[in-house]
Amino acid sequence: MRAFGPWLAVLAVVLLLSALRLRTLATVVSLAWLAWCVWTWVRPTRRRG
Image (cartoon, rainbow, N blue to C red; front, top):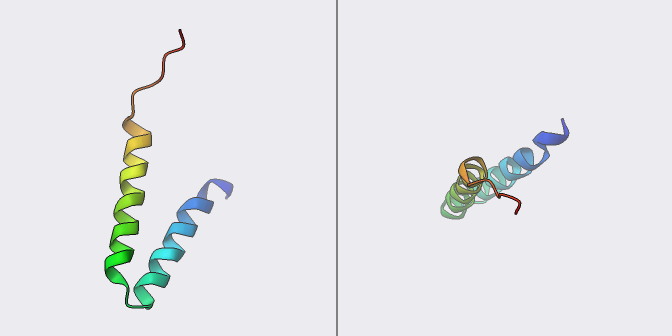
């Protein structure tokens, strides 16, 4: 359950922003979170020298 903390926090922020009629900001937050997740998944591994 601990691994879902950041996901649930971002989901709560997006839902809150959407409820406050700040859908553009909610979209920006969602896309930023998606970009961060993709980056952490595909980033090149650091090699130790």
